[in-house]
Amino acid sequence: MNKSDLENLVEIRLSEAQALLNSGNFQGAYYLVGYSLECAFKVCIAKQVQQYDFPNKQLATKSHTHKLTELLGVAGLKQKLIEKENSDLDFKLNWAVAKDWSETSRYECIIEENKAVDLFNAINEPQSGILAWLKTFW
Image (cartoon, rainbow, N blue to C red; front, top):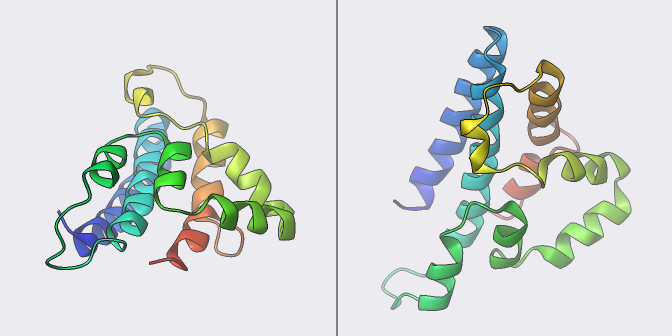
């Protein structure tokens, strides 16, 4: 999987999450919108890898996680996130909603509508959403 594949996967998972929200399937929507954010972080990490470079084992190993806060660090964006939070309160609130997403949510049988919608909006909001911010580092 390469950077372009991951970028496409972000959009596919967002579209799927939107369809699930629209049909009232909040568990799947919550999982997929969070997964789209995970893929977006991995796009930023993939950008660090140059064609024909021998893979950095530590970078590769640390990239194989689902924890958004860890991926933030691997992508080298911790300081940038702090700066953005300090300049944009809505972004700070969106990150507070998004950062606790976990891939284990795929096993949850009950996720309330508001939890799924809040995560979708936190990630996908055009001005202060996490995805819009991450795309500036693609």
